[in-house]
Image 1 (cartoon, rainbow, N blue to C red):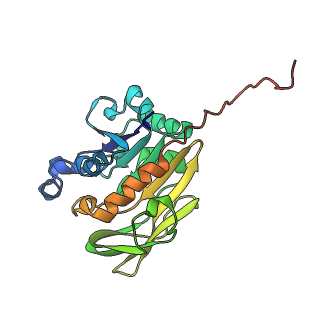
Image 2 (tube, rainbow, N blue to C red; image 1 turned 90 degrees about the vertical axis):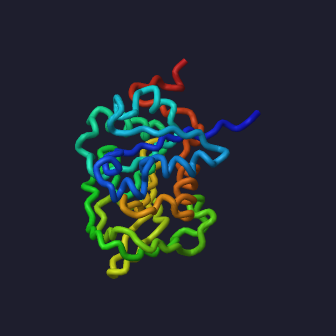
Image 3 (cartoon, rainbow, N blue to C red; image 1 turned 120 degrees about the horizontal axis):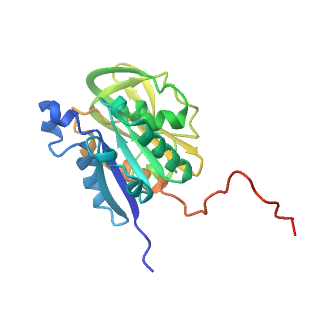
Length: 242
């Protein structure tokens, strides 16, 4: 029997690409399509996309219930995401769906609901180099990556990053201004897995970089549900009762 493919939904605001020519030039089909393009080439993945302007932001109950891993890019329109949709995403993660927030999704509603912190950090749009150093070389997310890779142009994110202590730290970034940042972090939330991956400023072709693409694909495989049965909560009859 063939193994079931990982069902991936790539979500993007799709706002920058419509409003800013500089971004549209880099991502003419949208950031979501640049990410989805590589994932569609993976034989073990089945990929769809969703955007903010669609009904239910493209995240209907049917879509969420048939998503194993949700990849989320956001920046301009965090506040436009319906609170009920954000809560449904959180609940699906608790039930076992994987979530991969990218770049400015550190301020997205689903991520903050799952973290319980502000998600705040330092930033600077200088377009200088970023070096991402691997801190867990044996981790599934770092398969195919050497001890580091370089992005010639990126936005700077700096510590302190106001998130709970990661379960695992996968990447640390160094920036040309001297700052460092925890750029690859994982957490378990309920039955689900969260992998935050930092790179991806909208004016740079980061999501065409082979290393970045490999990390996201690896992250999808890592975050996919294990297939374990759902946990039963609330009132529970004693198993010792006759």
